[in-house]
Amino acid sequence: MISQVPNNVTTKSSPSYPAWVTDELLRGYYDTEWGVPVTDERGLFEALSLEAFQVGLSWRTILARREAFRRAFEGFDPERVASFNEQDVARLLEDEGIIRNERKIRAVISNAKLTLRMRELAAASDSFPAEGIPLPLIASSSAPNEAGRTEPPQAEVSRTVRRRGRTLSIEELERMRERTLPDGTRVPGGLPAWLWSFAPNETIAPRTLEEIPTDTVESAVLAKSFKALGGVFLGPVTAYALMCAVGMVDAHLLDSHRRGCSGLFN
Image: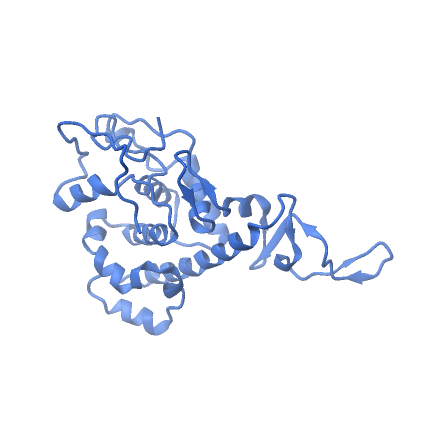
């Protein structure tokens, strides 16, 4: 589930909202969710999916339809969404409660499948040494031994793993390992750990909305890496919006009553 407000939230006598918070729906979201760390797989997959649907639209448009999205995509359970077929796509295209964009719908299904693959890789890599990945995850190529005979390298350890015709580096696999945030929060392996591996060590300190960037070096690297893994519909701008929404960055203005709500930055 999406995380709720932590106990160490900053409190001020008079709430201060940014200009994009224009009504009760957005105020409720801003006061209880935006910028609060989300670390579970389902919650992050939902956030990733909704940010994809938001491309070209306002966040309010998506937020007003969030419950309909949850019903349509079966609670954004990655396993359920990954199993969607053409009948499900047709069903979603007829659902007036959501954004009926076929490219975005198919992107969510594709990203659900990637989420499951990342989960599997993380589960398998938990027992792997830092020096490399054992052969069951390596492309089944053979290599000549010292005598010149070709044998399957069953006992070898490689520094790379093949996935969909490309090589997955140890660094990429390390990003998928379970990790712990500075406040002690455990981030499960797979998509959650991978996303949080791109969190900056320091957050921004904006006094005005104009001082909040639309993208950063971290969001650009995240987007590029996601695409390399097979992910879709996540560019640098969307990636940064995701990072702000799930608490990887504290984008609250310095005078906001919500500044510091993530509990991760001094």
